[in-house]
Length: 479
Image (cartoon, rainbow, N blue to C red; front, side, top):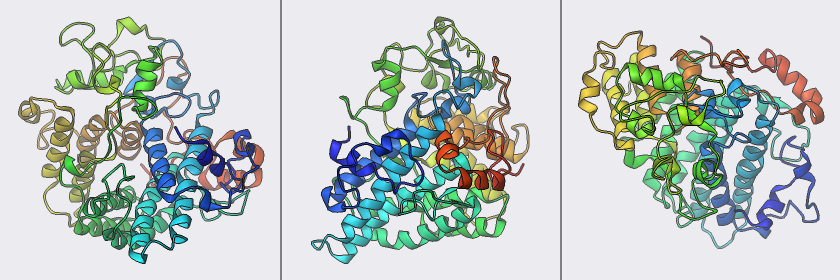
């Protein structure tokens, strides 16, 4: 849990237009005095806030596993039916990312720059680590909303204008290119939850994030996509699960995996496996079912709840670990910001497009599946890969459909990336929710507070992207 000191610092009006009531509390402290909080604390807290946000399954803050249709709900089904408004989910994600991730990281940079005890190389390395996490967070915001406040965000402007999403992407690529060379210095170590200050690992993480930035652009800016992807691979991306950007949670609060908080500590039974993923995995006899799901209906029996319906908890397949407090029900269950499986599928797409990334699309595709099996401790990889519906040469569909399906399956515990795979590859076929019958969203709508407090800029941004609706497509989602 963040100390009050950090929370007070974060509650500043300079945090873009996230001007909810919480941002006006405790204004008796000067929010512009960065010497009040150590850079180590700000950096550490921002890292945890970022990974907690992308890992959580609390329906007030993160519904990406529902958008990807890995899970569906039981008693309360608003979110499975794409109701973003009742719980104001976009507002939470917006505020949390701007305030507790980006602002804290920006402030950590300011504190580091003012620390006369640090050498310039130490400052550069620490700031480069913060910069990589900021780039990660900025991309996450763009890929959630589209155009967002960027150039005027985190500064003095309390009602910032929105920047064009494609322009932000270009700038993020420039920023990551500038940051990577500085990662070789002596950066954060003891407070670095990802790599413990290992500079070589940070370079791989940064290049893998750069790969992600580039691959998103393949359909809209092929030349920039190719140069970015090839540069990332040349610089060195993940080559095994040992490289994954992972946080290892602890067994006691407040440092448990947030999944445990909502699946176990809450005492609730809000989620079951969705029929979307269960049916697909049943059809191809995917051995990961025994790692992804409990066998509460009998040995080898998996039945997903109808997506978006009022599903009875006892009658459908549960999330793995319900019966023995393992996997997602384990408070120490690790979480990833980016992993080798994801990188491998990006490389498979790049190879199909003729980019110079080494290896074939089939080899990278196989690596992505194998990395997922290894991460989950699943056996029978060879049998699975020999399945004609899985083997790259015989699996049905185009290369996009082959890669997209296996990519989506591998992102099971990373709902945002699973949803993004569907948006980019248009596969697999997701279900229409039973109750609302609404189409699958392609973006978050802007927070209600933006409409109320930053109306002119919200209206301009809404017009620029083609309307502030759940089905407006992001700039890179052209198919």
